[in-house]
Image (cartoon, rainbow, N blue to C red; front, side, top):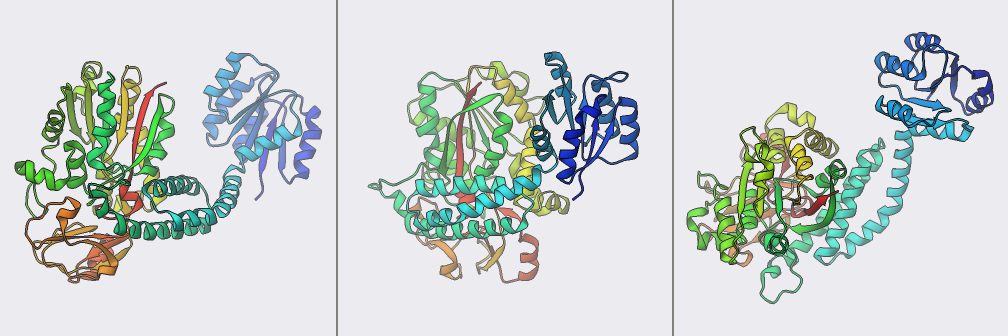
Length: 516
């Protein structure tokens, strides 16, 4: 790759040793002694990087910089100056320069600047590839030895960090290796869930993780009892790696005070996991204690219409007297109380916002070809999440909340996984339609390919019939009916789904933040 560099300085002759040094490294250098000549050269040639002196006769460096940004805004410009005046630095940085160097500069400073701004992606790719290949064996051993929820949480935390780093790499081979390791992790995690999930509900179990129905009681209510006001934001379908992708956007305004991974209940679907979270009850107890608020899968009615009432009953059941404000929305509309009267709303002890946008992305991706292209793979899905958040009303809300004396909690009800492999299941007409789990009374399947719960009451799940049972897809499998099988598989393969057993669906973030 030939790298073309333009160096603009009225004392260019004094810089000949630097230019020779760079040419010996293989770079192609062009020089200009004033801003007018520099702009003519910029208009006639393509440059990968421009070094620009700040103090020149005629057009100043800042004036040339503004013209360069109009003529070729994507070319990185490194400003070099004798001046250490803060206002010049501010103007240069405000003009989106790539770097700012103070004279006299030495050749290695110049070389480092080139590597940072021309070779950055290649160098990051090389370093990421080398580091991941070194870590690969260690993570593999941790996957093979993980035998507790905390150990699996640590494995998934590491894999999530690597996924974000590898997404920035251009090395497709390391991405393929990572995908294989992620599949291996999910295979072993599926075995762990098969062996342990039912045991977590035994009264004498000491290894039970924090689960959906415990999250408020164990984490949020103690904050309220200590006198803190809490803004509780539940972003539907937010995976742990998606949280890590947006964390840096929030960082200038809110500092992470506590971050942990908890376990979504099965099914990892909104109807079950979110109702359990707000009610403080497992679905079986919701159906038994509040039958008017439970709707079975095959019933044609809204499955999440009573979250606010379940939350209030949860609070009352514990003998608390919190003042609560609750909103559920896909976007913060102008008529939202949170949008128009944030300070007043946050005077409540607990302000709850349920935000459905990421869930809407995953559903739209299944149904719309354009969305499939926008979120074509894991990297694109994470990038789309980050882009949405950066420009969302929710981010504006968080920035405003940072100015209030309030604890912010961000969490979710479940995650999601991109499904790849169809698993055949036969069921009657009343069988639930979710691709990651099935609830029915006449299910026919290969038990080695799924996690089966033949007695739902053991997992504190309700059942519409005495003989009803649950099965859950493992890893990146999805459950497909034999009729019209090929069309069904083609339509749903590579879509993001939830309801089953995987690290991405079950191991989800709980984060407490406080103002900077």
